[in-house]
Image 1 (cartoon, rainbow, N blue to C red):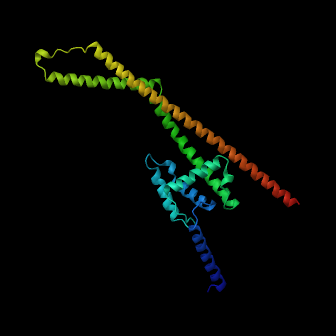
Image 2 (image 1 turned 180 degrees about the horizontal axis):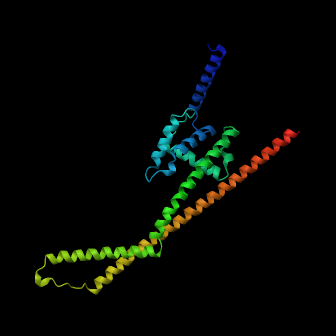
Length: 251
């Protein structure tokens, strides 16, 4: 038989937990504990691995998971969760985590930062794993040889269409009119000018894509530098804290 005091304490703990849930339902803003649960859900669902057009489905799944998570009583949909997560990532990786320290404990702040940095590392690893595949495609389609290959393929397709057109016309001609005629020079000149313009447009589009890819790589490199600087700063703070604790123990 359980001791009455134990039963009473267990009942009080349950009531206290329910009261915390009720209080949380009255809140509208995220606190440190909510951010931790959000990061845990993001780490489980991994929305960065979503295929094109499915990203918001992943965030809707995250919002649904949070609604069924004990301790998270905010009513937030997928876009709201996505906005909050992107905000805390931007703040923490940008060295502005102090702005987020309005509600919560030091342990919760540290746990939130640990989860965010872990997720950022997973995202970087996922993107880095995708770079070799993109590099192969760039080598095949992006360099001078790739452009020559595309131009040759286009010329072959155009020539094939011209042959099919000629053959189709010959079937409807009498034997006396089956002699193949050469197109006028003006028509050939106009055709190749049009083809050259089309290929110039393709080349310009490819150059813009390569420029955007380089800008994305530069942004990722800058984010990595900020992450390393943040880790160094956090280590420095921890060392200073430990030194202060040691000094207090000596006194």
